[in-house]
Image 1: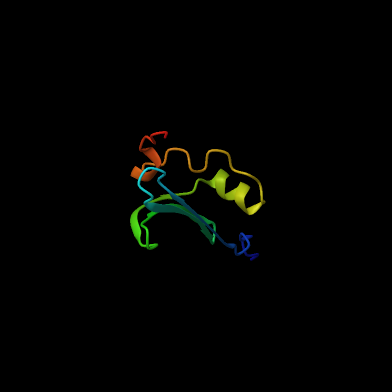
Image 2 (image 1 turned 135 degrees about the vertical axis):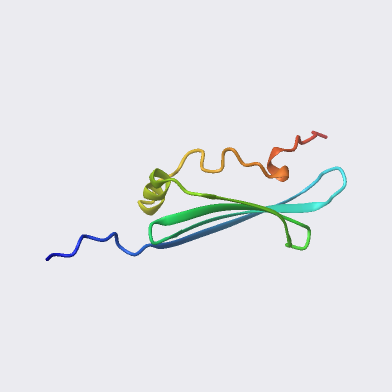
Length: 96
């Protein structure tokens, strides 16, 4: 009896880190975006970082099948980080 065709083993990890500081008081803060895909299942995680690089807040969501397919094909995924509920993403920024 022939074996059912299995999806190829995929291991993908992408980590991007952004740092910025407040122009008013000079406090440093950052965000880290992590996308991980392993064996057809994936997660996207956004972390708020403190001045020393410690994780202050973290939110994680599972990736949809369409997002996983586009990422593994190397295509851009519009709106991947839309809907982020971290305080660092949703707070209003005052202009100087």
